[in-house]
Length: 153
Length: 156
Image (cartoon, rainbow over all chains, first blue to last red; front, side, top):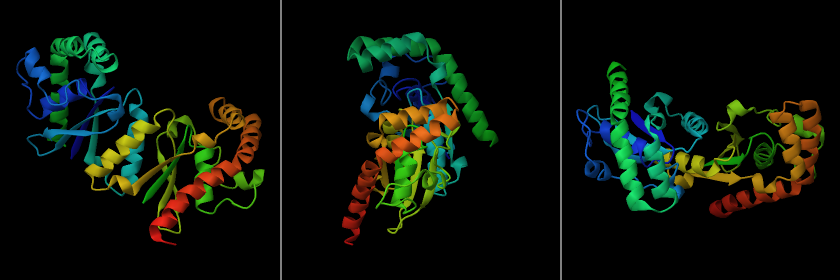
């Protein structure tokens, strides 16, 4: 099974959720800012790379865990991917897409915009990591739900 | 190889290009209204199908010829499909995206919007067909360029 966490740019919520899923961030406590900013690819994706899926790692069930940015076109992009898999005779059940955009808060969006759009990387990255800390329990809940689904599947 | 002709709604220019590619539409004359309507996919797709890649047939080089409506997300979809393909062992060079939108004229856009977005098919369809007939030679050229690449690859 391949798991794809997706968000707007593939730089914040999907990166954090996929890192949590792979055990690169703790489930039982809120990480400090340095831990969040040290996550591979956190606040790194440029506009030209939005849409490309990146492998974050593997979970305890040996599933491959990816993150991907889909802007606000996630339904369109997912339809394209599923129809492509169908065209290539790859079973659709092998790919699971999880929307991580809805768990993100305003601070992370503003921080992400500052860093990714306006190029103010230091303050933007700090603000987006601070925002991730504020909504961290929601991201943990999302990942836990996904893991329960995977266990039951 | 998988060849995906794409445009905004996957109803007109991409369907026309894919049909020309497969020989379902002529290259020596501009098709009549009836020839477009006989295609089955022309001016048919609704918003709920945008993003889906439809296979129209296999060309003489063994390529799967497809069309797709991608709204404003052509680049993201292309990167996503090539990335997903790579994950499943399909090389990016095996997937070719061809944007048919540069061939589209204002008449096509107007007629297409009236037919597809406003659901006024009786008014929009004749207009979009007229527009497609006007820019038909451009679409033929686009397809000829794509097929020329394949002919170069196979040395035919």
